[in-house]
Length: 187
View 1 (cartoon, rainbow, N blue to C red):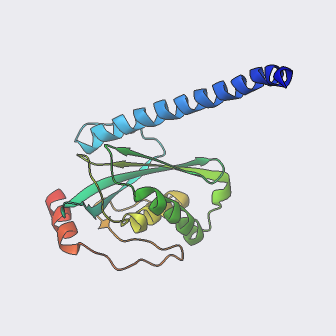
View 2: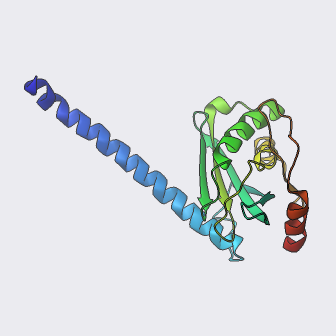
């Protein structure tokens, strides 16, 4: 038994090292993207060369304090295996991951885009740490992803909200007054 463990140990260590290097790469890659996007969300300049292939959309949401807030969601699709990668800057609630995964599937159906061979990377940027109380970015992310998949631009002056269901329907939207006030203050 001890001899088998000794023989397998180098293989286990090699796999572990490979996974750690891959995870370190992902952390570095998304931290740098998040830093650049945070600078942009706070009025800093980000060169168009930095965000090649990234599209964005403003999204309105309500925080757990009952305040309306505008978030900017950036999206990029690359070759892959159907995964959704998400980063937030700074920390933004927990509902976004499941909303993003649903949005990716809905967008693929709406645009006839095969997601089995592509990964989507999303970055949600806010001006401050936000605890979003509802998964209301799903409809916006769906539209953003459809625009990326079809190569069509989005009107940057338009904001959207709503939870998207797996069948593509948008549920009743809450916090309309708060969201409208945040959108008005943003423009």
